[in-house]
Length: 153
Image (cartoon, rainbow, N blue to C red; front, side, top):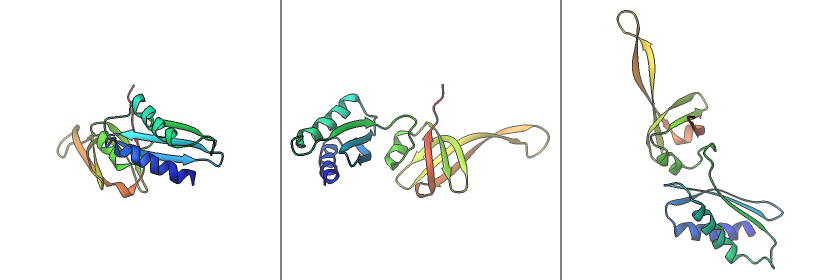
């Protein structure tokens, strides 16, 4: 019952900020509430505080004792929502499907598919040596088992 109430409050609050969206909502048996959000332009501390206050304001601690944590999706967390692909266009991704693993720059993304591009050194068609070839792979989102942004340091 608490999870349903929190989900309803969360949906209401996120509708006030269309660039924000839910990644995960967990409520443990001891009423520990953990909410993970993301945004098309990222998530600020102010966004997390606003979501937290909107939910906390509507819950009565006299009625239900709870703890509440609102965080943003971490930089190394797997991508789980199609909207996260669009915000990461131009970044390097590591994508695993049931059959293969790909690593490349995300060049296109919509609600159904993504396109990765990378450069590969391959033998020249004629003669000795190698040539750099631009490779591309379209992957349906439903085929993706795990996708993560690759951070370069």
